[in-house]
Image (tube, rainbow, N blue to C red; front, side, top):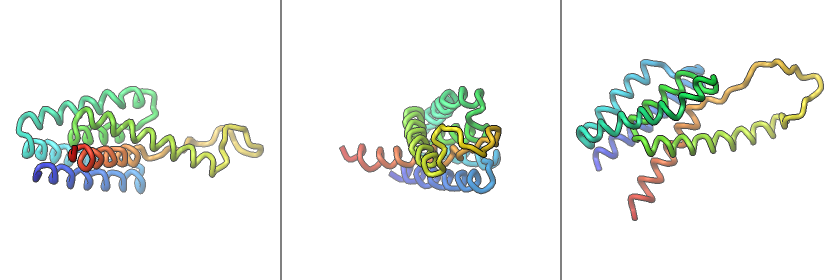
Length: 161
């Protein structure tokens, strides 16, 4: 249980700091990702030994394969990829997959609400420039919330059964 608490505490701290940086500064710093990646490896080792470290590296690979195509298509930035790699080190391969899926679903819902509120329903509005800059959502917020939702669901609901 102590290992689970250690991973949960550091996971929440990492997500909070990365989301703050992404929202305020539009960047997730490499130093932050490296430090928490090393913390994730240490926490995985303390809670599960070498199999825990293997799970961390499998999570890193899963996070890489999830975002490599969006990164290559320039739908995601490098910081988002590194965020998901570090997230995978904390939670493992299957959980990083479902966390990302939940994050994409949450991002779709928020994007739809945002577009409805702003009046951007796909119709060309008069007086608006069509070549305006692309607005981007900070992906770390959605991936982080998806990870927290799925992590807490596993911790509270699935562990009881």
